[in-house]
Amino acid sequence: MDERIGIIGGDAPRLTVSGQPLPPHPFPTTVQLHNRFYVVVDTFPTVDVNAVISELERTLYPPPSVLIEMPEDEREQWLAQMPKGVETEQVEDIMDDEEVSADDTDEIG
Amino acid sequence: MALTASRGQGIGAFFMLIAKRNSNGYPVGQVADPETISNATTMQPYLVRSLVNFTPESRPLAVVTNKGGQAIISKTVLGADDVGEGTFTLSEYDETLTALIKGSAVDVSTVDGWAQTGSNINQRNFPRFFVVFGTRFTDSTDGSDYWLTDIYPNAQIYQPDFRSISQDTGVNPNPLTYNLIPSQSTKNIDGRNMSSSSGLTVVGASDMRVTIRSRYMLAFTSFKAASASTTYTLGYRPVYNTATGNADNSITKNGSTFAVSSVNTSTGAVTFTAGSDADFHVCVYQTEFTAI
Image 1 (tube, each protein chain N blue to C red):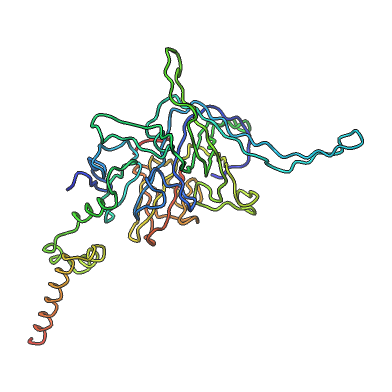
Image 2 (tube, rainbow over the protein chains, first blue to last red):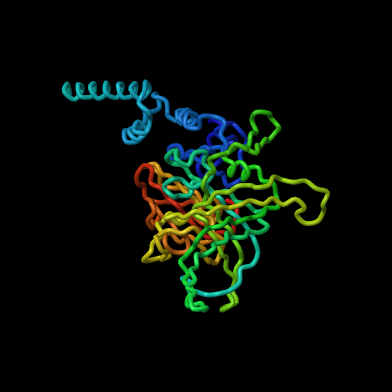
């Protein structure tokens, strides 16, 4: 996992969003990612904070191969919070195809 | 436990907390831009432990004298005619505080191994802050100790004189003095609106300084939620786990008392039922500033 990402209730990140050493506790500004992870935002950031957070958030999304194997409700939760793009469309296409083929099977059976 | 009105003496200058104030009147910690905050952001104030003293602003009153027949017939006080500037002194040069009040930055990235701060002589926009001063209070009616917290919900700060150097020895040979310019606010530090008919009962439902007496020191944490958010973490361990929102700890959401599911005195976690994107939570809690 990226050194700028920490686990809520677990290990802290090693670096701030700007890639600097962490400030003393309590961290002045933190942003939660998916309710499970967080990043520490610099008081005086040197990067586009929102852009970096979006990029870091993206690394936490499960890849399509993992999403497809997930229980449906968990997969739907992930898809709901992931930005629409190639990966989500790929998963939705595969799931649609599977639903169609399952319907076909039912009809044959 | 509910307190009753009392009297006593304030003693000592113990701590100062400072947090930026956004245009909605909420404390927003040390965020770079108070008006652009991502959802799911937790914000802590900046704790200053090098407070030496604080002198509040003066408030000259407008007074009209009725003088006739070689006698003072009456005098009438009309109210505040002006508001002066408060001053506070710190024993330490604090780079973070300096950059916060100057709307500048501590530059640690241009040259690795340096921390640079400018005087920002051309500064025209002075950020607005919540500024909190903490002092002990000995209650003379029951002999017990409390804390008095003086809160400025809308203040600007400037540094009239820069850090000096000298050959002096002894205690604090080179203190730093700052000026505090208070303004009125319709919101208190807990996120609630002030009222002219209940609670604080201040004229115009607005004020520039509020004093709170409590058993322990007060600190605060703000959280701008995402719709899926169910927790945020306080900056220090709270003394009380009271979760009702209006006892021991003040907990609000969008300016109204908000009962949460729990307040953990070890981890500082505040857990609650999920709400909406951009809900604004503020928890003002009693603490001994024990790190989490």
